[in-house]
Amino acid sequence: MGAVMARSDDNKSMDSSQPRYIRVHENDNVAVVVNPGGLPAGSRFACGLALVEAVPEAHKVALTDFAAGDAIVRYGVAIGYANRAIARGSWVHEDLVRLPEPPALAACPLATATPVPLPRLHGYTFKGFRNADGSVGTKNILGISTTVQCVAATVDYAVKRLKDEVLPHYPNVDDIVAITHPYGCGVAMDAPGAAVPIRTLRNLSLNPNFGGEILVVSLGCEKLQPARLMPAGALPVLEDEPSVAVMQEARHGFSEIVANITQLAEKKLKKLNERRRVSCPASDLVVGLQCGGSDALSGVTANPALGFAADLLVRAGSTVMFSEVTEVRDAAHLLTARAATPEVARAFLGEMAWYDEYLRAGGADRAANPTPGNKMGGLANVVEKAMGSIAKAGSTALMAVAAPGERVTQKGLIFAATPASDFICGTLQLAAGMNVHVFTTGRGTPYGLSVAPVIKVSTNTGLAQRWSDLIDIDAGRIATADATVEEVGWEIFRLILDVASGCKKTWADHWGLHNEFVLFNPGPVT
Ligand code: CA
Image (cartoon, rainbow, N blue to C red; front, side, top):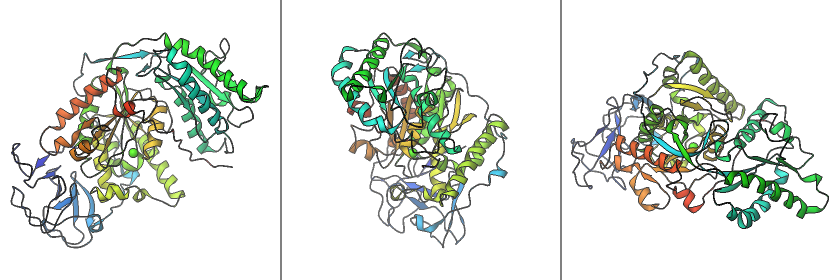
């Protein structure tokens, strides 16, 4: 972004009651108040600027006088236009900001500013579970896949018993996870949109943390048959070792069904239990990035620090995925310029165009994105949210683009297209092959996933203090000048390696906070 962060003071040892703001880019004509609880009218910053009214924490203050129609510049770009005159020192709240048009996709530059590769980082490793297909697990989990919603409650019943009675005999296996969902029947399986949930379910089962030991539970009469969920090759052991339990084949009721699932599961558990962690290069990491419950500090503290960590990961040869189409749409022109090749830029534009049409068909547009909490947190609109959001993607070239639910195989920075909805994004990133997730939040969410560890980074210190047993890293220290973007970036990078090695636990895993899988189904229901 070429951002040069400027504080209203450059004195690191100021007392905490001194009014402070952060301006991200030298061209910005608004800045964000960072004092906890905000500032009252009359507060005077070290630069001499005085507030003409109270400004809440993480909200914007006008650094200049605006006439109606003037561009409101943050991150060096117009995040909107003044609805009316705004005096210097005023609170620039959402009602004063008119949403600009999104960048026209046809006019986006194609790979015109591809960043040169950063110096390679050598010597960083983690201890993971090496899989036959070359991927690496950060956990050792038995996954039980399902073809249809009808079997979900039964599989949940069997898994509960397995976890209580059987799993303790297999100490090298971390968990048993039922991949249950509301899909598989009563849907138009051959409609174009159906490809997304079907490949999501398939690729979820192939997540590296399941170690290739896939068990599928089917009802029998459903539309999504096991052979369609897992085509030839995806279940290599099908012939010599049964991996599919079909409920309607049971002749002795529920207890036989549960016994069948248990028997198949024990065979898989035996094999998984033989596995041991081995030293793996950091290039075997597939790290998914996401934000949720964002505020105006997201783009100042947590996301830039995560962007710095993303650059470190790319330098170490890892795969780094960012997602959330509606939160990058307004930065499309910046990301296509950063693409490695015009083909990558065009693939990115293809995903943007698909989503524009998806929203249009649903009678919505990108303005539907910011939540009431986002707005209370100081985000005026989706443009401001997008500029803060893409800071997570760091500064390296965009190497590839994946459609929703596709498995990612390339190294470097990848755009894996997903909705911004936290649970759909997390589910789709797991399908893409994610083995560690990093999640930034300003408002706070106890989000967690069963399949991959979720490291949560707070944008502000208040949240990290209120939720000290849910937030793993406090990036709010950047706003209070207690740490730099680079320091927090290195902290995130090192924690990723420790969590991937199983030697540190995220708070979400400590408490067992594992949200449901949520499919993205753009196809019709019948
Ligand atoms: Ca999200």
